[in-house]
Image (tube, rainbow, N blue to C red; front, side, top):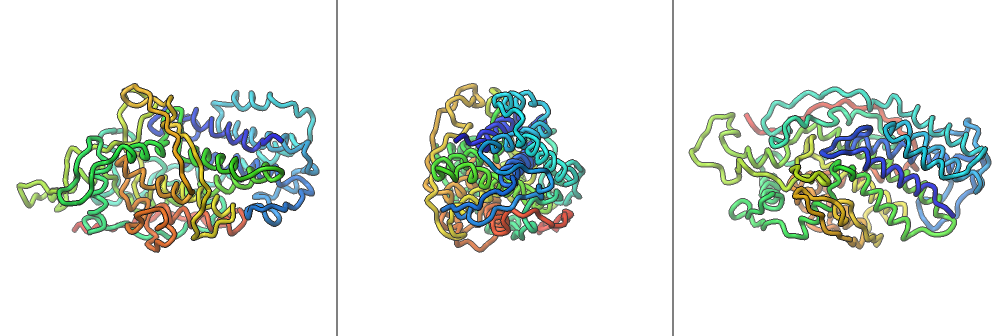
Length: 496
């Protein structure tokens, strides 16, 4: 039986890649924020077109995420749904997906049209229903605040986020994205404050990223105990990147690729289409809400990235420009440059630091939400380890991706023995690129992937993403009624 959901998922992921032309630039749905919203919309449409057909049978599945009745995200009962049958399954899913994708990616309408021409659905009633569902999803999100733009009040402290000094003119992406209407989460979960600059916890994170994330490998702060980045750590950093690179796209695309691998390994038979429709809707809605929550806190804290924090640690900055010593502070390197988010497939262009604040990490939040809700779907208890393994090749390291020096990166198939380990590697990968502090993703006591299950610090994107996943899975993918929250900057600076 053909899996229409996986087919249209692949087309949506292809449009994400085609849309991005490098350094977080996109023609239609730019960056991780808008692309996560787009993926959520197309998967809601496919979900409701599949499960919303009349007299859809109850499922008797071994997978927790398919047990019991499956409710649609929107009320599609008034859209003349045909009686569920194998004949109209593909037509309904395809029409719903195509309708949303044409709307979201107008520059690539011919790609969508070519895909639809590959089927002969004729006058199948599923076409009319799927088209109506797709239009309902578009209308439902038409006033969600995603097109409002605008800025957020700036925190007037030197440790706040500013443009990457090696990539001037990049601007600030998604300043008010945190005010967009949530899809399914009941609220933006609470998040603990990041460590205060120059505190012990901050200093340890500073010393680590200075050594591990430098473009030119160095020993880090004397006596700090951090060794330079290893070849494996460099690979981990690049493997998870997806920083809007040309023809690669954004992090939610990679997490979808992994979800596809997990479905292929763990679902067979009659459950396949239902599992694809349900799980990919859960995953993408969780990531869309993760993006809203992460960006809410990013512009609440406006915390700087390592390229500024390491360059500006000196007392001449700390004391308001009045130098107190002729010596340079041991933690300050005015010329430090990170390995950076790679400009893959743009030979000759140098890497960069993403154009939005550090805390919390978007990668860590997106990945934790996607992987945790997948774990729940397959019946893994919230704080239990899992054995949902996968072997996957990242588009950043597929043997065809072109590095900054014009060479092809080697092809690397990476094995992860669990989604929990993937959650951990995804978070720490950002330290190895030098674009995030360790606490942007994980609490200080999380030194291995198992520690995620017992950490109570609530620091970073991993606990934020996991909380969103639990909320959505427990409410059964119910449409959120949360009131949009304004962003109020929070000043944690100890600077006088």
